[in-house]
Length: 67
Image (cartoon, rainbow, N blue to C red):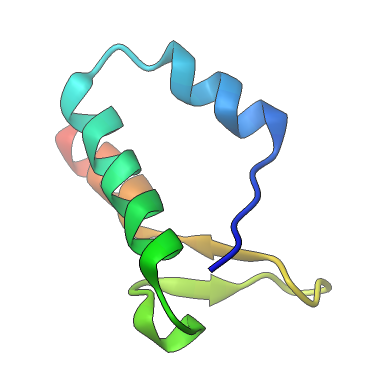
């Protein structure tokens, strides 16, 4: 699957010091790139007002829980 990221997202990833969190983010990105269709991606939510924009909540929830 073709995937694109905002520059602000890529800069934010570079600033993360927690190696485990970075690793989890890259696993999610890898899963998205390997997905054949949108149903293969877990925790995917369509953003309102956009046609082709989505978010994946898993990483955000783990960040809050692992704090």
